[in-house]
Length: 592
Image (cartoon, rainbow, N blue to C red; front, side, top):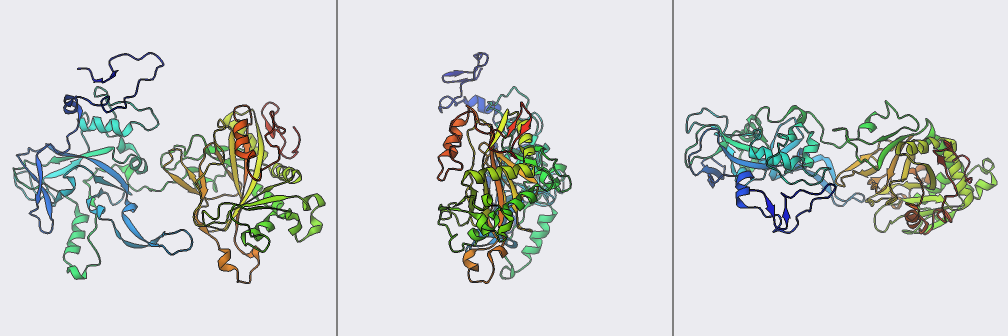
């Protein structure tokens, strides 16, 4: 019979270009019981029960309720794929000033009870936990000692579904369905990839947790009321023997050990690999740096796929770029301003979300080295949400026109034009304008906000971030959220490398604790002697009729606004890279 939904007949051919209706009411997705019998997978087959085990100290076990033949599948179980490290309980310190409940991975407190029910290989970072009824009551029987009925040892083993079986079809569909493609209903007449998870990296498998399966199969004939047993493997058995021979009062803790898998159940690509999300290019940048203007998507090391197809890119800057722009920032007094702001010196201690306008040129010790225009340039400082998050992020950006033009010219002189050209050519833009630029400085961060600086601008805008001052030997400084919104990758800032984060590119400052002004207020140190981190973000866009209103909404309404009258009308007053003329003009800002 043809499968039919109430109000939706799958036998009717859809018109070309028309999306098929999606059933959403329970009556619309209800199928006949015969369909479940024909194409569904029975988990326990009704031949098993739970009872008190005959094994010493085993508690309950699983028993047959009828005769089971050799080779018969007695249980099919979906599997939760979980990182091995997630079963470890580490010490945490709830009283720590920064990063509450920080995990100290040098001190292991114990292991989760769930570890006792997880299958795994000692050389793999991934464990598999059966979720079917009865599966986790099956006890250890040791190696099988023969195929005769009632032989000692295991009478059942686990395996992946055989090709063409119902389990292979259903879970082959479930595993591959819905990842990047539109939802497709299960079609029993279609041949789905056989056990596709075996070809994937463990990280990819764990992202599809619950959509893989293995079967429990009889090694020999099993009689009625015989206990079902599997072989947990020699590592588990040795661990249990060592534990059980120790007097209960002398044991250091509870027994925790994963179940071993049969030889060759785990494919080679699951072994001797890392479970860490790492970006491939970053590992190679120091030995194989990006060429100036080269724009590459950040890609995962484990599968080569992009972290995001839209908003996570690395951009090569000219050699020495970071040092040149840092020197400029020191010469105009911005670094001196940050030393005072982040040390919360008198006159520079801003309240949460407070801002003030400063002339950092007046802070430069050698006043003869700076011109009158540079000395009187005005920059605003904004302390961001420090009452919501325990961190002292300060934004510093140009306030008057002289400062705006000076910053843009310094970017151009340092070689930022190549970044604009690279971004523009990579994404096929007609032009780009750097409509805003901001320094960002911080010394401590308990928690920050995952956010997007730019959104809904028709994929034509970027926040291009590069480092000026970093603290050596520290953890990664920036979190970038992957496009699936489930994974966050931590990256280090690298000299002469920028990260380009586009529309809806969510990111945040990672927790750090270089120093806390409150703790160091009484110490006789100059502000310049405390470690700080300062980066710069250049906000660039092809501003046109598709996004002009949105950019004006995002930025021109800020208090304080980045630049006066920045989005008053089209075309933009300034174009800093133009495809048609191949021109760049950051070093000559203020011209159309």
